[in-house]
Image (cartoon, rainbow, N blue to C red; front, side, top):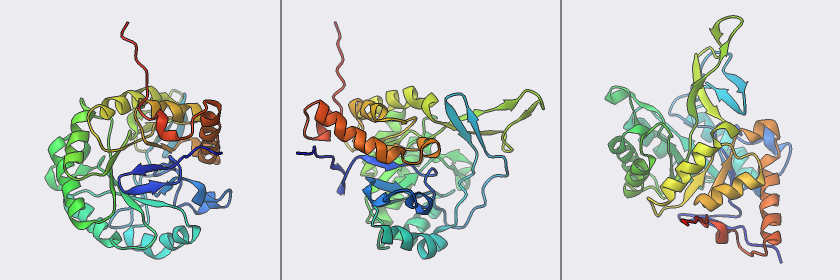
Length: 307
């Protein structure tokens, strides 16, 4: 008998706890040529904004030691084109679809959520709050508990979808932000987003990225992500979706042990496109080897000895 891999993210039931992270899987079409994307726990789309965005100039991606540095600039087709041209494919694929949304004001977040409300084929929204609140002077929603609470409440008012709020590591106390968004109506939180970083070409004496700085992802940030998952798991009761350097089955298991109910695979998709599917298979094998019949048995089961 195969072990149960189903988990619940609020009222959303996933067939397994492995998703693909926003910004690393496009709109799913390219990867669907390689495998059946409906076998994933969920596909999290590129961040969707109210209007199309071209993003930052090239070059905007560079490999670093144990990581990937990107300054894509949240390039996307905009919510109208997404609904008309991208969502139909995802719906046809029968994948569980979580749409990542963002904005530069509370009103923009609300407007995007309203456009998506009721659309067939969407299972949940992931609210990326790692954006500057232009309307309030540029403060980042993710680094201020009151702003994080405000945008979560606003989206909650206009959306009936389960809401996952994506947290930034650029804070002194991520648990405070997690508590704020949970109290404001988030059904779950996902963390961590990329960490600000840069790369320099020592020959040209110039930044490698045209944008100068970007966001670091990949194995280099995994220890930071694990610690933050552990912190948040002790601060809130809502499910946690962990991400940050998950490259293998063992990485995913570590996130479960730290308190994550599900995980998102990001940078690994660029290195080995079948990474997420391979990890699902690996989790199943791990549970069989451990003589466990349910993946939920390992969630938050990190053993700590005080002696």
